[in-house]
Structure formats: structure tokens, C-alpha cells
Length: 84
Image (cartoon, rainbow, N blue to C red; front, side, top):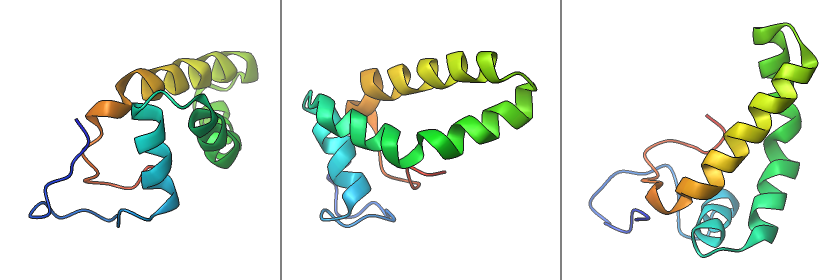
């Protein structure tokens, strides 16, 4: 369930590019997932590589993370930024 309650504080407007990507993913738009990956995949891979110390494992974790984001986009409550 995407947060559409105007009383809940959110860092997004409904025209924010990240918000639109999450909405698209919740509606099954694979292009939205690809765009989110293009936008944040490199940064997340660098973070994960530094944490686990192994690029191959970091790549596997990144794939798991992106799959989880895809499968759970409909539950995003927009209480924080996608980037965080």
C-alpha cells in the first residue's frame, strides 16, 4: 500500500522522481525498477562492497536488495527517502 494519506509527513511530493519510480514498480512497471537500479545501483554496490569486502558477494546482495524492493514496492510508506 503506497502512502497516500496527506496527514502523514513524507519527504516526497507526488511528482518527485523517486516517488514516481516506486509507484511505477508497485504497478508492475519493470522500467521503473531499471531506472531505480541505474540511479542508485552503483552507489549501493560501492557501499555493500566496502561493508562485505568482496565485490561478488556485494553484487549478489545488491540483486537480493533490488528484488526485495521490486516485490515490496507496494508497501513503501514514504517516511524516508529511497536513497536512504
